[in-house]
Length: 268
Image (cartoon, rainbow, N blue to C red; front, side):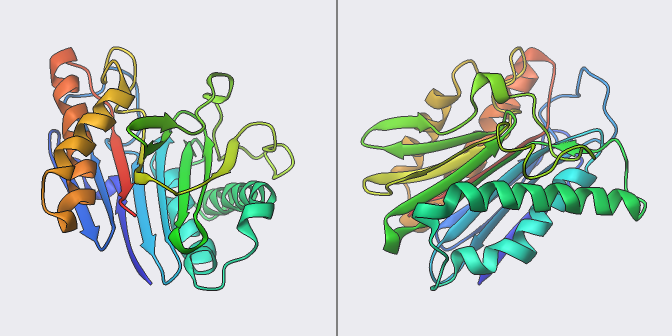
């Protein structure tokens, strides 16, 4: 199993993009292209993860609020407790049981964040989360999204957004009142076929925040994917991840208002 994790606390210089790629996956992260114009605790509160196992690829991005602890904890818990089983050769019955597995995982991630608070973490820290699991051998793309981070599937010449429903954009992990049961109606989860998929792209709202990011995030994803497709195959995931973050940073500079941005890409 191969993995990479980028934590916002390690990347706090404005205008700089950190990126890691291996195999069919890549992640990229930046504090932003300009200073934030709103109150915040930590300079960079986002996090990104990819894991590639013998059976599949797991991607995740987390957009922290009120500190970086919640976003970090969410992706670290995904890596430690869920990635080995989900990306291994003998995965659970994901197609039929993904809905229950996803909400149970969100409940465990929320509990892990609260445990970090109890051990001295920042009590105000919250996070959105978007994750996607690609299992090409099973023709399966499973996804879950809580809050306003994006999950995009590039298929048949289209960019489809999976999740990010308008009425559920203000949901976060990190509240003591939340459980797997209470999160049931606050997230979006589903299963898609991978057939014809060029790429799966996850990105936090530093790409799309109104007055800060790009006007049409789907168009930005499509343009970055098209540019990557003209390059070397082994560099395509990295080109999309880095390209999207750089596109967001350019808009931050144009608007003179920034936000953290994290991206995760798989090119199955």
